[in-house]
Structure formats: structure tokens, C-alpha cells
Figure 1 (cartoon, rainbow, N blue to C red):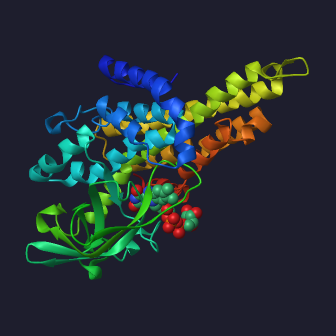
Figure 2: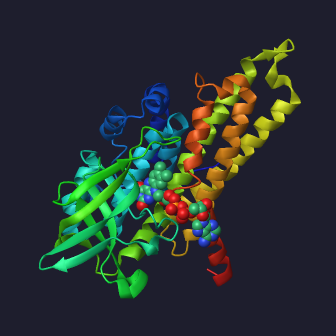
Length: 382
Ligand SMILES: Cc1cc2nc3c(=O)[nH]c(=O)nc-3n(C[C@H](O)[C@H](O)[C@H](O)COP(=O)(O)OP(=O)(O)OC[C@H]3O[C@@H](n4cnc5c(N)ncnc54)[C@H](O)[C@@H]3O)c2cc1C
């Protein structure tokens, strides 16, 4: 069994989250998927239990959890409901630019309300014509006195319109390429900020994915993160640290599918015996479990490298996210096969798990992009 290298208290916290997820989150998952509404009750639960406080330092109202504990928490929540696991993952994603590059005043202003769960955060990098090629963004930020004026839009933003705090990347100097991109904290209430289309989706249906529109949006100059031109670096450093969380979401979905398949195989009788007594089914279950364990080792390893403050870890984050999401697709597909017709119908959660798993191969960089990151590290010797 993959081991978390964390203190006893964090192991106890993860065990408590596992229990909470099984008791309080799992019974809600089907209804969240069915309604497609953001699960405010789940957000409140995570806030009350200090789970949303995990990614934040104690001095800013958080509980300063290790990355290993955070990925384990995302895994346990996603094992029961991928949308609920994403609430924690995105709270960390949207806040990470502030955690990494915010000054003391910015941290004091924003982190406590994110740690308590009073406010949600979002991360705005993608635009309608720039996804994998994020540097091709068009949103502009022009300095006018003591404010920046933002014009443009962001597409596919998780928590878009729900988040009070948005970490937004925009161009401040087009001639400088990636070094002309800057990062800003943009509050939802700033003049010129509006929400465009809200996407209908295949999975993670309770998570809101929206377009953010900036029309002469007025952002105080003190909301610049770091210096002008730091934005692309901040955006990439953020993803390096949050991709293991998406790996953990995928891992949790896969584990939930295996749990289901094992239980089902033990009780489903065909040809006068449980289907689990067939070696063909046993081999499928064994392969599913082995892939999950391999993915868990990669996810824990990437998180541990982050906890240790390793410098060159980004390809390990990519491996964790890529492998865990690829096997989540395989394992959820196999779970459907083991449930047969019952796997295909919406009465059972197997089909939801497959739909939820698919996004983990796409967001925070598609798995093709993760392979580019890994290959670059190999070829440059990092
Ligand atoms: C539900 C959802 C939530 C999201 N949440 C957020 C969010 O909170 N914040 C945010 O900023 N973004 C978010 N995204 C955006 C997401 O990160 C992008 O969709 C993703 O990075 C891919 O970009 P794209 O969709 O434009 O695809 P494209 O970049 O157009 O890619 C299309 C295909 O081409 C492949 N491809 C592209 N370039 C290469 C290459 N060089 N080599 C090989 N293959 C390549 C891709 O892998 C993919 O298969 C979200 C997306 C979704 C669907």
C-alpha cells in the first residue's frame, strides 16, 4: 500500500476525511451529477471541517497541510464525488498564484477568506483561442495611473462567476511574448467584470465552468502579482504544484470505480455463482487495482517532492497527472464492463465515474502537453 510520508496528525486527518466522504459526500454524488447545480452544501461541509483550509498557511487562517495530505484529501473526496473533490483542488489552484507570488498585503487581504471557505477562487489562463498554447492569449491589461484596465475574456474557467477571487493572466507588453504576461487578482465585483456563457458538460456536472469577460475592467494596480511580466511564470509554477491534485482527483475516481466493481462482482450471480469467481473477472480486478496503486505512487511522489521543496519536479507532477488520468479512463471503463448492462445505466454510478474521469485527461494541460513537459525534462537533462 502506497505510504504517505506525513505526521501522525495528518494521517488521522486523512482518515477522518475518508470517513466523512463515505458518510456525507457519497450519498450526494448522483444528485449533484443529475442536477448539474453547484453543490453549496458540499462546499459548506468542506469549509466547516477545515478541509478548504488545508492549502493555506496557519498565519493566514489555514491549517498549513502538506501537499501529500492535500492530494490524499482530494483522492478521498473524489472517490465518492469528483465534483466535490474538485472544490478543494480548485480552491488551491485559484489561490496558488497568490500563495506563490502575493505580497504580505495581498495575502492578508485574500487568503483568510479563501481558507475559511467564505470566498471561492478561480484561475483564469485559458481563452477561446488559446488553450494548450496559453501564451497566445489576447486579454490585455493597460496601466492607467493607479489602476490597470483589462479587456478580453477567459474561457472554461472552473468556479467562473462563483469565485470572488480570480487569478487572471493578461498581456501587459505584447512585444515581450511570455515575458509580457502579468498576473492579477481580479475581484468579481470590480467594474467591467462579467460572466458570459456557462458550459454544459459531459461530467463534473456540479462544477461551474464559465466564460469571464473583461470590458474596461478596472483593477487596482496593487493587485498585480509580483512584477509586470511575471505572469506566465506564475501561471506555470502554479500548474506544476496543482497537477498532482488533478492526478489525485483521477485516482479517487478510479478507486471509487474499483470499490464498486469489487462489491458488484461479489454479489452478482450468473451461471449459479458470483461473477467474481470467474478468473476473467478476477484478472480485470487485479489489473485495475495494480494500475491504481501505480498511479497512487506517482501522485504521492510528486506531492512529496513539492513538500520537500525540490526544484526540478514539474515532470513528476506531469507524470502523476497524466498516468492517473489515463488509468482512470481505463479503470472506469472496466468497471462498466464488470457491471454489464447495470454499468451502462444511470441507476449505478459507474457511467458517471467514466464521464467524470475524462476531464482529468484534459484540464490543467492535456495529457499530450504533460508528455511534452516530461520529454523536455528528459531531453534537457533536468
Ligand atoms: C471543464 C473544464 C474546466 C476547465 N477549467 C479551467 C480553469 O479553471 N482555468 C483555466 O485557465 N482553464 C481551464 N480549462 C481549460 C483547459 O485547461 C483547456 O481546455 C486545455 O488546456 C486544452 O486547451 P483547449 O481546450 O484549447 O485544447 P487545444 O489546445 O485546442 O488542444 C486540442 C487538442 O490538440 C492537442 N494539442 C495541442 N497542442 C499540441 C501539441 N503541441 N502537441 C500535441 N498535441 C497538441 C491537445 O492535447 C488536444 O488533444 C478547463 C477546461 C474544461 C473543459
